[in-house]
Structures are given as C-alpha cells and as structure tokens.
Image (cartoon, helix red, strand yellow):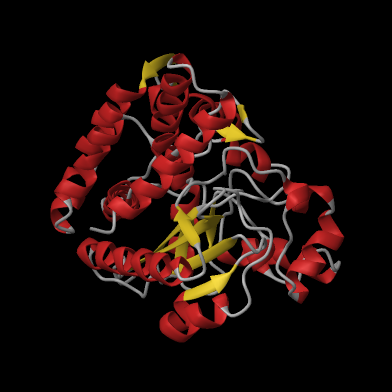
Length: 377
C-alpha cells in the first residue's frame, strides 16, 4: 500500500448580516451570488439558507497554502458582499436570529430537503467547517475512519462558536451540534470492516429510496463521496482564521500518527461509541474547559492535560508537515478561549455594565464582524 498523499482542503460556511441592523439577511440580494461566482468560480456556492455562503480551498499540499487560501477566500467574500451593505460573520450561529424569519435558497436539492425534513431542515441556520485529508486507498480510509472517531470530541471542543440561539445563552459551547443532531444520519460514524461493507450499507439506503447517494450521510467524520478523502465535519466554523488553520493541521497530523501506527503493525484501540458519545456531549456542552473521560483510567481529565498528550503524540507528524506552530496554536485557543467563550465574555461584560440584552447581543455581533475581518490582515 502506497503512503497517502495527506493532501488537505477546507470548506467553511459563513453568515451574512445587514450592516445597519446586524440581522441575518432574509434574502440574498439579486446578483450577489453571480458576483461571487464570477470572481471565485467553483470555490464559492450558496447554502441551504440565503443568508449563508460556503467557500472551499483548492487541494493544498501544506498548511501555509491552506492559510493563504482561506484568507483570500474570506477577504474576497467580505469585500464583495460589502458592496451590498452586508458584513461577513464566521460563526456557527447568529446570536438572535429565528428560523421563521429566513428563507432557504430556491434550489431543487434544498426544496427536497425541506420537504423531506420539515421543521428539522428549517432550523438549519447553522454553519460548520469541513476538513478533507487525502487518503487514497479505500481500505485504509475505512480503517482510519474507525480509529479517528476517538478524537472527534477533542477537536470539537476547540472549535465552539455557537453559544447563542434565538437570543438566549444556551449553556452550550456548540449549540450547532444540538441542531445538527436533529438530522438523520448524523453523529459519530459507524465502524466497518471493509470499504465493501460500507458500500453495501449505503446501497441498502439508496435502493430503498431513502438517500440518493453517500453525500446524504452527514456523520461527524465520513469517507467523502466526491473525493478520496476522509472528511472531518464535526467542528464549528472558527471565527479566527488561525483557529481554523490549527484545527485543520491537528486533524491532519492525527491521521498521519494513526497511519504511522499501522505501518508498525499497531493501531489505536477501538472504543465503544457510547464512551466516545459521552465525550462528544461534554465537548459540546463545555468546550475546551471540559473534563473529558479518559477511557483507560476511567476518570475525568482536564482538557488542558489531554491536549498536551495529543500534542506530544503528533509531535513527529507536526514536524513532518512543518506545522509545529499551527498545531501549538491549540494552546492559545485554550488560554484565551474559543469563539464561544469570547462571545459570552463580551455579552456578560456588557450586561454587567448596564446594557440591555439586545444591545449586548449587538456588541457580540460587532465583535464577530471585527474578528472575522481581523483574520484577513
């Protein structure tokens, strides 16, 4: 078996808000998507709601290229929508938006989605980040899918950017996950003995007419149906560009670490999904201030301690990919807080200073706009 390329690509979903009101836009202005497509081509596309836009990097060979691509895409989208009186927000939820105030994109696939899933689909005013890593061999992709499930909660914990929903502090660092989990075929991935076994299960659903193809399987981690990649889907979209780059680098390094184990006739231990699901919930609820369950010790361990263990495990791989600084940025996220933590700090600081709930939430959106733009410099 040839070594995987470990090529990397990132997709990010953003929100568009009215510059004056800070509300999510109900409809995309006429000509907006045409202008975006004219400049960015297939690297930009609409999403389910008209207030959303998705971008995707080209296939990248190193993390510096990922950073440059994401920075350019964020900058281009921000500049183009600015001409329509809009601002770009890189966050997984808007602090006070309500689903009934928004309209989905008039496209057959989105029409079908709403018709099939009803209110579940209409609540999808959420954004995520997807990271693709090239694992060209089908059987290896299945093997790493199973082993990679263990660290899904650890990556989610760093990414939280969705603490608010409909004007309320949800108490969760990633409320996006709560919304997303209402969808079918989401959550932790299944474990399969082979690529053929995986395909057989997909074919059962497709033959029954439940799904058209494997693109309708929306697990936290999945074999991409379009590319020979293993696609991480669990993370919130990061407000800070450097946070996004960090998570992409850490995911890629973890995959290579698992591949190194395999090359030495070793593998990461398989753990019951009920245990991983418990850590996933704790990451969703508490973010990177969580204590996660150490399966071997059977005790809760502070995330900071687990992070140091993770960084030690992938040190060789970070050196191989020349992304030591990007991976180490996880410590910065831990020390200064994720986007969710920073949004909550701003909100409660404003409230303590006497601001109304509405005014405090507007200040949160102002920060999100500013931080999204700051990452472009």
